[in-house]
Image 1 (cartoon, rainbow, N blue to C red):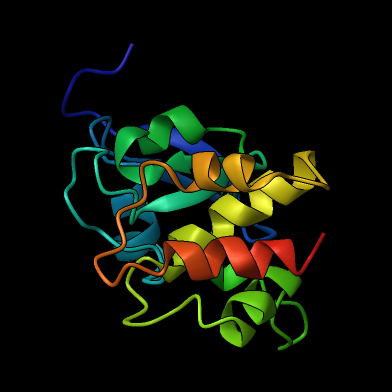
Image 2: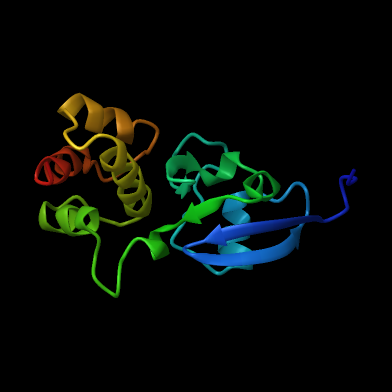
Length: 156
């Protein structure tokens, strides 16, 4: 068993690329993604799970990267905003957010894209309430919530 200072060996697939690395047992997944892998599209906000800026997909489910240790993601597939576009083209969620002005400053945008991607992967006809529930826990200081709802509704 590892002590608090011993590194933990993990194998994690991020945006389709597998990484076999050692991480400190206390290393947050969001810090691993940003600092170790250079994937800075995942934002760090409150660092307490309240703002949702660090939302990523962990095995397809939207989770807050600051609430997961990198070691807990051993064997998992992680998707960040950098892994959403395909062949340089925006995903349908990204495109809809752009077209419906669901972005402003962009700080929460990666989290919104990933949360809506998760929602649409499990619910192809979400109601307005479903969409709003999926945004719950992602703070947007610009207030684009209604535009995000409208964007998702264009996809159903």
